[in-house]
Length: 517
Image (cartoon, rainbow, N blue to C red; front, side):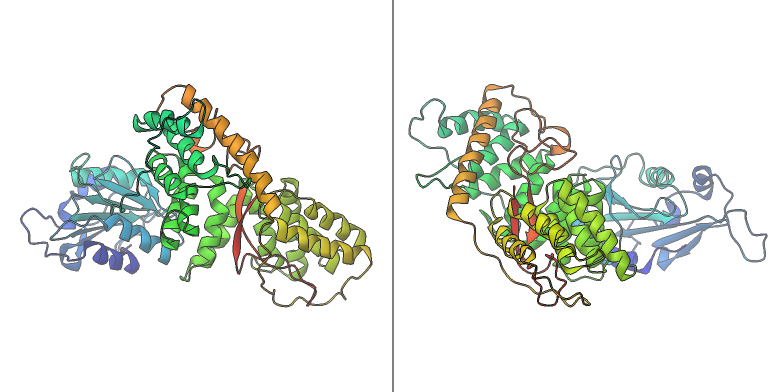
C-alpha cells in the first residue's frame, strides 16, 4: 500500500519548500528503522522494503510475486518530508486538506513529535507526526494505530520532541478595560473586578463567567440587553485556550455573526469543528450549517454527518435537522421512506422541545406527506409551535399561527408531488420579547457570576468537556448535558413553510438566525 496520492500532495504543500533528502541530518524513509524493527511491531515476516520517491517513501509488505500468498496481507507505507525552513502552519495545512478532500475526522495524538494527528478507519489508519517545523512523518497501512505509533517512536527516537510550537497565532483580541470609577458592592462592575482577578489567576470558570457577564449581564433602561461583544470575545478566547469547549463554541458564534470580532466563516467553522470533535453537542448542528454553506467536494457529506451525529447524541435541534434531510430525500430511500423517517425524527425533536420540529410535523399532516392528511393533527402541531417562547421565534410563531388558522378552517392543499422549497426571511424579533428575554438572561448570568466570584479560585473548566457545571447558567446546553434553565441556542434557517407547492418544510438553506428558547 502506497501513501495515497492526495496525502502525498498535501505533504508537499505542508513542507512548502521541500529540500533534497541529501541533508546530513535528514534520513531517508527506509533508514528510519530496520526491517527487523518493523517486523517486531507488526508481528509478521516482511519482504525487503522498497524505497520510492527518491528515498522520501518506503513500503513494507509481506506479499511478493511468485511466493505463496500470506494468510493476511500486510502493507505499511512510510513517508518523510523535510523543509528548508520551519513552517508553523504545517499542521493547519494538513488538517485543512483532510477536511476538504477526505471524509475523515482527525484526532490529536499526544506523546509524538511536536504535534501529531491520526485519521482514517481502524483497519487502515494514517498517522502524521510533525517535528521541529521542518519534518513531517506519515505512516499508514494495514496496521493498528498503536502499531503506527510504535513505529513513529522508533523512527523519531522517543518521543522526538523539539519544543517547536505549531499553529499560526491569531491577532490578540483587545482586552476589555475595567471602569476607573469606584464600583458599588454587588454591581456588575464590581463583579467584573472580582472575576477578572480570578480569571487572570487562571480560573477558566471565572473566564467563562466574565465572558457571559460581558455578553448578557447588562440591561439598559429600555429593558434590552446591552451586550459588550468585544469583551465577551476576549474572555471566551481565554477560556477556549484553557480547554473549555463551550467557550470555543460561543467564540465561533461571534466569528460567524461578526459580533465583537470581524466576521470570519473560516474561523467560525474551525472553532465549531474543534468543539464538535471534542464532543460538545451544541456545536454540531451549527457545524452542519457551516459545512452546508461551504463548497468543497465533501462539505455536503460532512453537513449530513454532523446533523446525524447531533441527533445520535439526542440533541433536539439535531433531530429537527435530520428530519428535514429525510423529508427532502437527502438521506436516501424512496419517498414513503423519506416521510416516515422524517416524522420519526421530527417527533424526537419535538419531544425535546424543538419548535421547528413541531412546525414541520404540522406540515406533514397539513400536506398529507407520508400520513393521511389530517387537519386536526395539523392544527394541534401548529398550535404547539405557535406557543413556543423565546427570543428570535416571532417569525416561527407567525407562520405557525397562519397555518393553524388554515388547518382550523379546513383550507388544506391538494395532495400532490413536492416541489422545490422556497426561501424567505422572517420578521425581526419583537421588542417586548427582547426585553423579557434580556432581563431574565441578565438575572441568570449575574447569579452565576456572583457564585463564581464568591467561590473558589480553581482553574478547571466549567464541568466536563466545557459543559455547564455548578454555578454556571448552562447557556447553550442540550439534552444530555447540564440543564439550560433559560436558553437553548441553535442556528436555524429563517426559511419558510409554504403551501404554494404543497410540501415545503422549514429548511436549513437561506438566511439563518440563532434561536434561543
